[in-house]
Length: 135
Image 1 (spheres, helix red, strand yellow):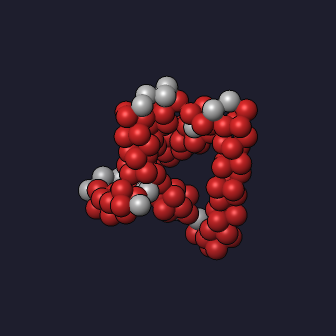
Image 2: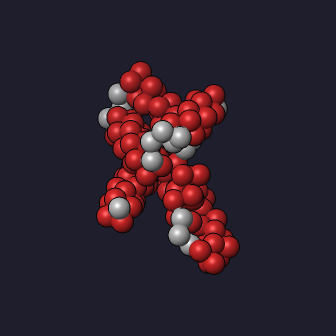
Image 3: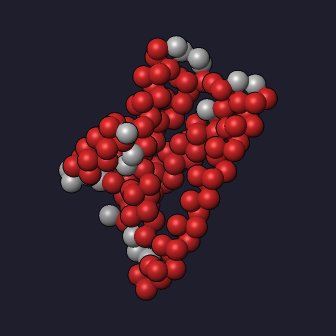
């Protein structure tokens, strides 16, 4: 939890200097890499990767939320309610991880967050492209 807090505070500070889309993309890429390391069953390195993921993950949701609402205009209330409803992934992912862990082993179940972080990486990259094209 300490790394999660440090990531949130540090990420907020970094975003005063670097655009949110870029911070999100790099955090998502590092979290994806961390999950890939976990999938290898890398022992101590896997444990370090697990904690690095917490550090990266801490800034992701508030950043995604802010980026997604940018430009929503008069529809901001409806857009924010849809975003909050989409958090259902937080209820589905652990169940999928549990099913995979029961069928194989715990290391293999980290494919679920790996895929989620890969999707966030793509989202951040696309968002950066959109905002860079507007300039």
